[in-house]
Structure formats: C-alpha cells, structure tokens
Image (cartoon, rainbow, N blue to C red):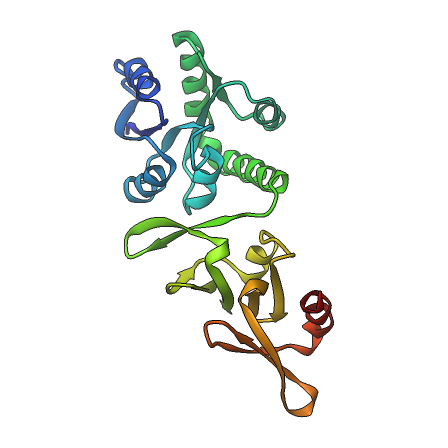
Amino acid sequence: MKIRALIIDDEPPARKKIRHLLKNESRVEIIGEAGDGLTAVEAIDRLKPNLIFLDIQMPKMSGFEVLQAVEKKPLVIFTTAYDQYALKAFDVRALDYLLKPFDETRFQEALDRVIDTRKDQNEVHQKITDLLEEFQSQQTHIHRLLLKSSGKIFFVKTDDIQWIEAEEKYVHLHTTKECYLHRETMNSLASKLDPKQFIRVHRSYIVNLDSVKELQPWSHGDYVIILKDGAKLNLGRSYRERFMEVFGK
C-alpha cells in the first residue's frame, strides 16, 4: 500500500520541488498540497495522510503550530531554512529534517528513513510530542487560539475572550461576539494564558480582567463578579485572595 503524502509549504516553488522529487517514487502517492497553516490543518484532518512534508517557517502559523492543532499526527519530514533551535531539537530526538536548499540525494535519505520508521510509529509520535512540548515551553503566552467549528478553522484573539467556562475536557470561550466550544482542558488553557490578563476565579471559570465591571458582595461572605457582558460569576473562596490582589491593583 502506498504512503499517502501531503506537501505543506507557503512557497509554491518549494512545493513544486518536492512534487518533482516524488515524481518517480512508487512508494508514495501525493494526495494534496497546502500553502498556509489553516489550510494544512483542514487538509490533514480531512485527508488523513500517512506522511507530511512540513515547512516550519510559515507566516501567521508555523509548522509546529500546525502539528499542535491536529488531533491525529502523521509521520513528518520537516523542511526548514536555518533555525538553530529547531535543528538542535531535531538532532536530540533523532527526527529527520531537510535543511533548505536540499538536493535529491538528501531528500531520498530522509524519505527512506521515515519509511523505515513506519513500524515504530508509536516511538516516532512520542518524539514529535516531546518536540512540540519543548516548542510550547519556549513560547511566551498565547495571543490567539485556533478553533474548529461547523467544518471551519479560524483564529480567535485572546483579547476578545471575556471569560472561559470549563466543561469536562472542553471549555466554552465567551467572546465579545459569541461563545465557542474548544477542545482543551481548563488547566491546559490556563497555563498558556497571560496571568496578568487572565485569572482563575473558580474551578470552572477564568476571567479576562479587562472584562470585569464590578465585584459585588453576596451572602455568607461570598462575592459575585459582574462582567461587562452582563455575566455573573461566583468568586471561589480558594481563588479570592489572588483575585482581590490583582483586581485591587
């Protein structure tokens, strides 16, 4: 059975080069191309390739972000211009990459190696997961979230999120326009948000401090947070001290 491959690069000549190098490759079937990150995520979810040729440095959405956004991760041959951090990370995990500009010999070596590793896919996927975790640890706080809704993939700016509500393995993102359901746990999302802007006020709620209108005393010494959109959220007792400290400032 042929390996189903997807080519992802924002530069048409780069995609054309890979397609040319695979022209006589009997083991691989090219099932599509993508010229940007959003299209790539949609294509991976829809076409479910076995292998992707993935450019790391793309505008708006990097190759790493593409991999973070897809649920089922295929095998990957990374393509990149010189990036000291990325190359070091690949070398440490024995993950293959193509450093642009690459020739046919180097391309064939990478292809042969990734085909040979198919029987050890679990090990390769763990290496990719470790790489993404390191990439995420190098980032500062996120300023946007990639969401999937009604077959569409789009970004939501964190500045537009007024409050977040937990629901098991999902969260509801209440924005200035509408509410979105996002597949991520509250703890995971909280670790990515800027703590100077977003604060946990309850085990089920995170609020954007810019959206807080007022704090009202409630019965038995409890408090209710009133947001600018009219929402009323209970302030959990274990989160009260931290909220008062930040809100007071």
